[in-house]
Image (tube, rainbow, N blue to C red):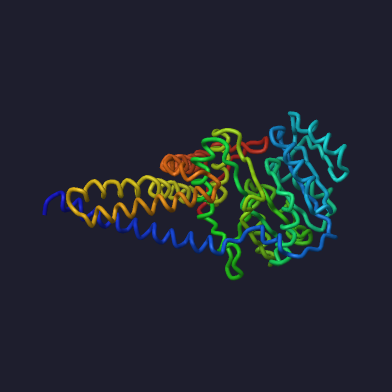
Length: 394
């Protein structure tokens, strides 16, 4: 048997395996899309608007986005709201911008905070301060870089009531204005959802609790039952910690797709994007170095290894095996179909699929970088403070 024969056989097994994988992935996407739960379900539901909703927004130097956030909150069709901004050690123009909104709308409250206890994460401490001044039966914690659709609060209260959720959260629609958002963000988001599939979060039996800190809607009694932000005061991803605490307390967690009703501009530049996603992945992987590295390898395998194997199969198949050729073509085609769908779900043009391998490399670099930070005890900077995290074996 010649070297070409051996190469052709090896490539045949690899390419056939990748084709089967991409076909299975496509079926998974079809099922997810068919039963995809979105917050728009609340548009058709009846609602009791007599209950006050307190919206709490921690803000640390957010002059870039705070005006847009405040405008959107004030325009909510659900009028029975209290809007609490907690300015956490701000040194920019955030206060000046919000003072205009407070003067125009008596539902807007501003709390200024100039310190943070050593054993608290900055955002958690600011949110706690906001909750202590909030008077609503529902507590909605959100971020300053969010933009609410005018019907979002109404839909959220309706959906949480229908689903019996003590904590309702949303997978936000991330903006895709910058090049790195269009190329890297869809891959980064997909890997997070891979760790916490929505259908596993929402199922009644043996759910995998998960929430997104950009939108956390609590029943007040459930929030207070677990101790509020005191229960997650050291967490850098307080959302996942909250989801676990609510579930362990015997209450239900639900997560829905925002479907454009909650837009978020997470990071202004790529450096901030990288550092932010390192923190997200570290906490989502339970600070497990091995899991971070495994995810990095998977990103390279999916976005580099599989496509290269298909291309190699096409090259070898043209001169040696028509079966290998067409199997490789089918594998590369299904890779393109799946990735195009994922980019579309993340509001990026399918044209950017051409850059998907670079997105995969970037995400692998972020994951390897996160593992390096844990291994070498490199501080993570977030919310005006630095944190040295200890790796675990969870």
